[in-house]
Image 1 (cartoon, protein in one colour):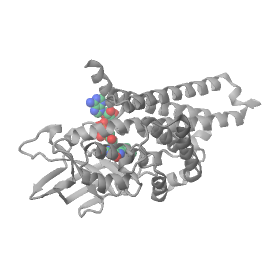
Image 2: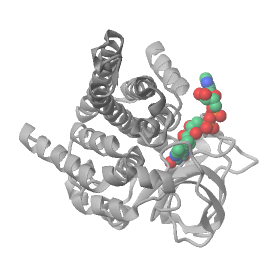
Image 3: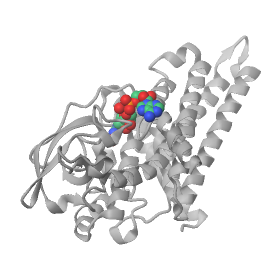
Image 4: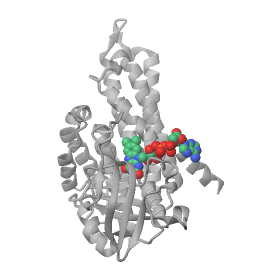
Length: 380
Ligand SMILES: Cc1cc2nc3c(=O)[nH]c(=O)nc-3n(C[C@H](O)[C@H](O)[C@H](O)COP(=O)(O)OP(=O)(O)OC[C@H]3O[C@@H](n4cnc5c(N)ncnc54)[C@H](O)[C@@H]3O)c2cc1C
């Protein structure tokens, strides 16, 4: 566990990096849909891709709270960079730490933690989003190899990563086993037959790479399977618990950034002879924005504390994700209103933040799915 001073130093490093290397370029990357792999690589050298990876696997071995504080800083500068960092740190890393063989940890986890390899996670398919267990991509055994075929949808980093954790069926069509028929494979993106399709033209997070993956006779040796056959869906859900905390921090970062822009704007913008911040209706809006952001941050950090204490976080991660993402959407909507006509224009930063906020209510489980997870936990 870090001391408060050490934690502040890590967060300060993230804030300085974000201010210098990310924030000044975020609008341009958004306009041109440019994914800055060089910036991600620099973050990797500083340890930001191995923040919660244990030190024995070349990571920083930090607690979840410190990681989320750093992620909030990166997200406040550009949520598109935060999603790459968040997925890599949370989902493939968690899956490898928990279920990787010693050889897989050596070959993949350690270079991932050192920032030499970028990873992603491909569960969704065009017909299997919320109902991910109905996925259809198929792996078939051929001697000592598995042969993967099918198409995955909307995978973050899929065209820019070095390896992807891919969930496919290993049960056969005549003996389907539902979620128990899904396994996870570690797929280097230079494997013959792996093809990342044209990046999606998205509303927000435009600098992040999101693309479908075509798997055409991708041949992998047995030892590219993660953990046990048939356990891939369970591993994916464990990864998503960690991932959802990251989305909580990402959403808080977006919301904080929009609040900071709004406070400045309301102090500068004059109507009826005075700064609009002097109108009580504007003050109340800012007050509500700040209060909801604090609540979202507190809920996310409480879930992080539970994770660090080794407790189950499924319920709390879902609460943090749904509350923070809906806060980000609400706060960015208020900000557009405060900016008036200028808020609707691309020249002002709040428009991008509004677009970026929306996806936090959708990916890694929609708000409706988070509520289903919460209700299920309450009924237990
Ligand atoms: C930018 C971006 C990046 C992404 N990155 C990744 C990634 O890296 N890896 C990956 O695997 N996936 C990724 N996804 C996919 C994402 O996780 C899915 O889009 C998400 O899970 C929702 O699935 P869907 O889009 O098929 O919506 P659907 O499941 O079709 O849902 C449509 C609507 O129906 C509602 N709904 C569905 N089922 C229920 C239910 N049981 N009860 C109540 N309401 C319900 C949903 O809440 C939603 O409002 C990404 C998506 C985006 C947009």
